[in-house]
Image (tube, rainbow, N blue to C red):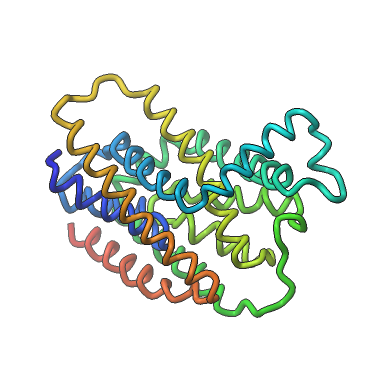
Length: 273
């Protein structure tokens, strides 16, 4: 792995992690074009660490509230079920509920996901699916929208299930979770916030699992991986700010044509090779 390739993939990760176009799908495509026949999963996880840092900066107040809610909930678990719970406890409880199905699906399909990273046709079909989901959000009107205090537990679970299936390359994590949240009637800004709060435990868990599986990391790869991670953090910050504006404006569907076009190109490329 050379530094230039790592930086290019870091920029690709940073931009596509938050825009609803599937960062994993773009990384799989990028690695395919670079001739990497086996998925560099540890490198992918390090790039996710970079984008996690972007989330930590943008949502720093929400993360403080999430941690506070966790401590309060541990002291009194019934607080989450109170008719008028502390907002921080409620947010922690909803994120915890959404994280469970993500973890279950991630563990159950870990081997399948690793296989899909090497399949360009699978990435193509998943991108088309992502685009179709995004396009459906265009019909959402301005009906009653609910914030964290009015979200039901099973709705948090559904969003978590959506995030679980987004481990497959080509299915956008942000696109899927925000779209499902909008379909359920979440307030637009809360849909974006909840999506990225769910991202935190998911990416931390993925990093820990990959570190535990790591046997030997060649010294020559440390520099490129560090450079790619830094670039992912910087570009991710800008992309995240842009996405939040798009969600607030209700124009989430504008990314659908891009996903469709890229998906078709992947299918054509896979058919020709």
